[in-house]
Amino acid sequence: MSKWFSPLWLVLLAGAIPSLGWAQAVGGYAAGCQFDARALPAKGPGFYVIRGSRERFYGQPALIDYLQTLGKKVEQAQLPPMLVADIARERGGPFASGHRSHQTGLDADIWLRSPPKPPHPRRLENISAVDMVNHSLYILSPQFTDRQRQLIALAAQDPRVSRIFVHPLIKQAMCNTYGQAPWLNRLRPWFGHSSHFHVRLHCPAGDKHCEPQPKVAPGTGCGSELTSWIRDKSGALSSKAPGKPYRPVLPEQCQGWVKP
Image (cartoon, rainbow, N blue to C red; front, side, top):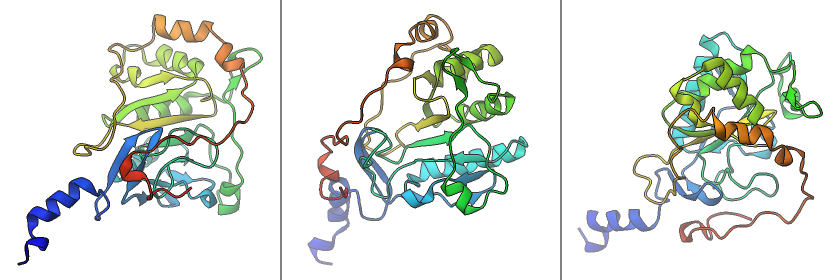
């Protein structure tokens, strides 16, 4: 066998070019890309993909497995099927508009509303969000029920989850319901998440090009940290004018791979 086709060369190439047929998340959640992504099916046990024409339903195998596993748990719990929105583009990288994250195939948005009836493709394509917060009174709306609590709890208990972003009032409701549950610290208060929650997985084992976030602090996060979010409504009330599309500097492995 020629030295150019030796196993050693394949190993060296694998470290330099993460696109030879195996999945990898590269870079950070807000500045990265993905290789060998998987598409989440349009529907499955316990879930539907919405707004599929955007083609933002690609993720790393760990995330696709997480969502399908969660869907089965949702079905077993006899909850309405969950609605999966943005995951990532097939090659990852920044969206033309919207999120700054969702670039490495490890983020997914799950809406808190129930699916339309009947859930045919046209309805799922043009579906509207349902806000779970009455922002004028700064309280949860009647639409936020035990069904939403159960869905978030099921989503948070998987050890692959790094954090789940929810509105501070939703975090407060989860703390009030689940007390000292150890997975509560994965629920991170963040404004802008009143109609959906945002799941973020840890970097998969072996993905040396994936940049993890710092670990979440110990404890449930239901004390003084949450209180500060509840008291400071400036983030909830502020509105930013649309700016230029977010275009971060991507890792070297992503440059030339990610389409504009």
